[in-house]
Length: 406
Ligand SMILES: Nc1nc2c(ncn2[C@@H]2O[C@H](COP(=O)(O)OP(=O)(O)OP(=O)(O)O)[C@@H](O)[C@H]2O)c(=O)[nH]1
Ligand SMILES: [Mg+2]
Image 1: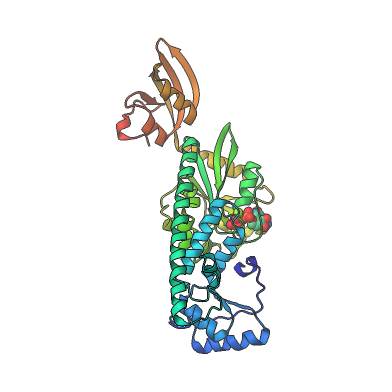
Image 2: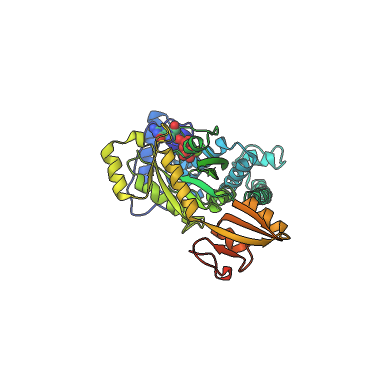
């Protein structure tokens, strides 16, 4: 599917079982020669490996098989680069590509020489001396470009940070999941917004945030994120940190699983692993089985038994979207407390903050005081309201210094 997404037509595939990869060729030398013959016979243009190859292995295979060799990382990077639309995604992809290329730079990368202003350093396989010099120039140019891109991403990350501050107080959710699970379809279904949906891998590279009405007079924010995949190149994860930051900041994760995929457990495990890798561990998560229009009743019941807390939906038909909304609502309510507050009217700043980040249910003026009933996230309740000045409904007075009520 990766190959297909990248625009290649797979004409033949082959597998080798080995205890461990060969240092020089990754596969055995005999197998590599077999592939060379096959490639000539069927006139294949490219050989794709479903694992990552070392720079030396790629070179050796290229020399032996005499075809372009593409490993899994490179394939994913190619797809990413063809799909990057926004400045941020393009910057992230370029950074990942250069990081991938740096150890692989050889004298063959003549296009880089041109970029570095080298002019006529053509011919590729030149004499050793000048060639080496050009290579050094290329490496330096690549490193300084990497630096520039990292700085640009830092800047974008800071801008995002500002945007996030303005959205403080609104309950935030993020759709995460294996690529092609149907995250964007669900965002579209929930928010009504126009979102790019494709039966291809990595249709979404940027995070898109939309407001979702839950009903019950409540709005939340929902962010669509880049899909995860097995054996995701680590430099790619690193480059996409700022996009994934939206998931890192979410109050609730909506883990979307393609229920119709036979090995969905593998996908679930991969997503959990990537989340751990980017530092998200014990985040409240709602498991969403999507594409239930594609599975029969028995299968659905089986899943229900195994995952009693999961939500079953079809982004395509809209089935289950209301259940999904109400489950999100329950999470949101669980994460909020209702407070009865008595504040001096002089606390104008605090009062306006409460209106901004909380849900003010009632307001009453008594003398110089304001009596308010406000729903707030437990987190905001802890950090915003001064010690001893509030009372949680039905639960008696609370000491804020010990944190919010459970
Ligand atoms: N049958 C069926 N197909 C669905 C459903 N939801 C999504 N799809 C299809 O699955 C494919 C992928 O959907 P997307 O919403 O683009 O998936 P995504 O998780 O955002 O994928 P990436 O952005 O590529 O990671 C599209 O062809 C959708 O039409 C569903 O409930 N049922
Ligand atoms: Mg998508």
